[in-house]
Image (cartoon, rainbow, N blue to C red; front, side, top):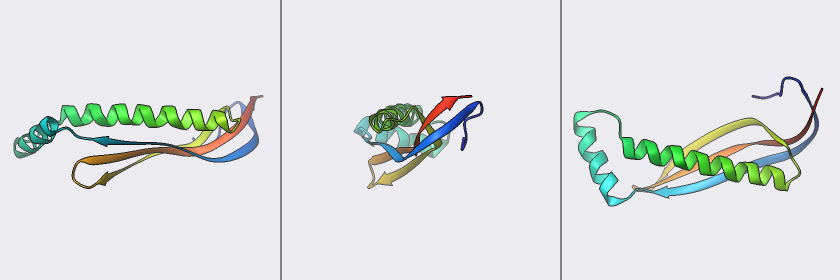
Length: 101
């Protein structure tokens, strides 16, 4: 969200990021290649990306707290491939200080 219903934003502290880079193991790479021939969910890849998002979010929260923030607005994820086996997952947003109305 870009706002916090029921809260006032007292101070904008700036952009915050949480970043992780994940490498696929050889087994999941081979399994994904075979699965792509017949279709269906790549469960190993799904699990890796879900865990990566969780870790990126944890790092984002830590950075927001280190800046003195107690909330993050305009939260987003970005994912990109680095080479053929690495995936970068970035959580980002704006750290703010907010108080309940």
